[in-house]
Image 1: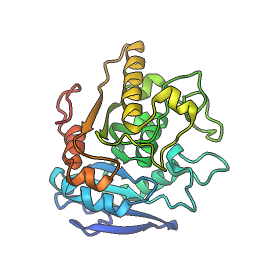
Image 2: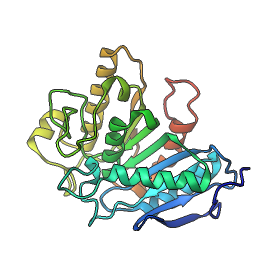
Image 3: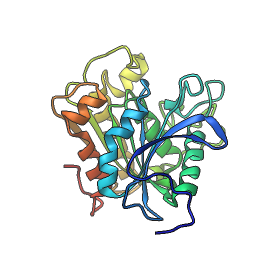
Length: 277
């Protein structure tokens, strides 16, 4: 093992604050089998901001697979637009905050932050797929769970519904040839079909994507697959239902065995076309 890193306690979920921004909190789990160059798994909470629950639920999988787990907390007062990365005038940039967290994690552990394995639930799923659209060169694979709505690979529609130049994100440029190369899996509970209070009920979203999370996830996967073929790419983009689950992160983890599904897709994939089991 490398000894040059300021390695924190291993085998337990730690609550940390950025050294250069004490208000920015995140959760970190370093497995006992840690080594320099270990892969990084990032898990992003929904609008209920259950970052600690994400870290606690996924820690056993991070230990089993020997990966460093990072769960950022995007507080409501600072990151009210985190699902869409944080447009100007709508709170701070969540993508920049995550990049700062990852830089600190690299200094602490020596982990590889250049090829990220990412998961997001609900609002976190929105953040994760948009982060992957913006930073495809940093992404190995992603799993999006029960996102309320999506950014489609349509260059004629303004962000965040499409990838036309995004107002409020002046440094972001979307390159379909790059982000369509990211292997992706969308998972949604088979009972997650209700138009609850947290769902975006915009008529434009309904017409473009469907009326519930299940329909919208399937529509986005189809659109991504079609766009990948247009660019002559054979990138895996799967849709999987989680049996007997509604819109609940903990129920999906416990009853739907979502943690195993996520880690098998992200880390057990020996061939580029492998599906989650």
